[in-house]
Length: 588
Image (cartoon, rainbow, N blue to C red; front, side, top):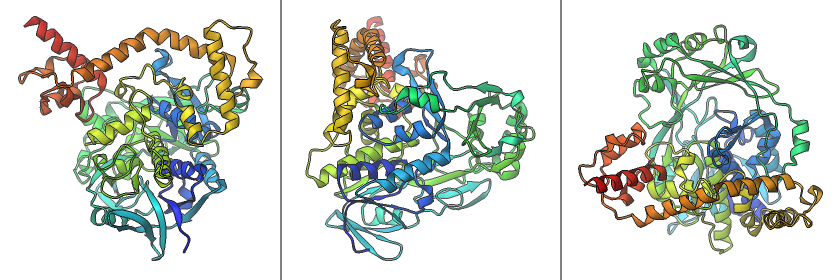
């Protein structure tokens, strides 16, 4: 290939897809290179989008013209609003997806996108001169020149699959690893790469499950779509939701696992890298919580036209025979037949302290990293970074000011600020507790926070933006009591009068709390240099989690500022710490 591209995206997972689409839609000639065009946007693990804090990020991507929310609406087979029994500030949308359909729809979006080409190949070399990237070399030896390169390789960098005591190379099961790029990132780009690991679960045949012994989990009666641009009533009418089911591990399950920890790639230490703390293998859960008699197993369909069932909560690195035995010990799965076994995978990642808040590397100009290569975990975290990397690569090429999100503006801002200032020592996952402004960065107001940005960068059409401006005017009219000049839903669609009234209700409900939240956030900033006594007893802080108390006790931060920058420490942890420090001061 002799053609030069403005931007090359390496990888077509959830990060690569959002990056490539953002670049092409802004009008930049873009090439996406993937190891396998049949695996575009593949859901390697859980066939679901959204969840606590993750759903908010999908809404934010969508508000700015990203693709994940829209694809989820049309590939989803069950929709639930999590935390609905609590306040709207922590409501988080989640959708169980038809994983095959999701991949097909996203692939179609890329194939139909103007300014975007797709190439199945492997990048072997990044071409760098004077610490500036100018293209890539692919497996055939051909050179493709580019002004900007975005790396979104997921778990494929030197990927190694582990099943019991067996291990072999692979980026996913039955898919080759990216075996050349790590060496180039280290040698030619000067990056320091480390290793993380993750596990996935077995998939079983639905026909072999006894659902009568399980607890049915239905979707919402009035489901909410992810995309702001989905017409709700029409979408609800055509949606066919499937049930999920709940069962539990038991003492027999735990005994099987405990007796065979030395046979697991998790337990015997063959995989030395860190795994996600909040998505552990069943081996790790049983070791970590020996007092627990059972663990939830969510039995989730993987699609409308497949019998494959995902056993959410049963992530494992056990050998095949032990996985089968473990599964058959669980209520309702006594006769379950495995279609795909679970496995552990370890892979290279680059500590995100080596990138700027635009996601451009500090070492090499015009090289951007996004997704799991930055030490994060999850489709939504990856897609968020892909969107930001894509936009900023375009802006760098067009010589525009970069797009940098603030923590009080979005969960995406929290994610990028966290990883680029604190780094990671375990796979990073987003939670509402990480956001000190979570009362004001809700899923319901993502459009009000970010759609102006989406339009300004050219990813929200003038037609849709015109309707959005009418919606904002409607909010003002309702607040001012002007019922005469209300618009009709046909003028506002996909927004509505009902949505406007609900938005105002939520805002008014949280108005006082938001003011308190802002004061607390400002107080933390002002107390940056506040000293913590050397002998401070963190173990007495019952309001903190055991893991947080252990981290504070181990690191012994000297000031509030140091404490706030420790990895995995959230703003809510700092607020608790400050309250105890004030209490101790008064007592003294």
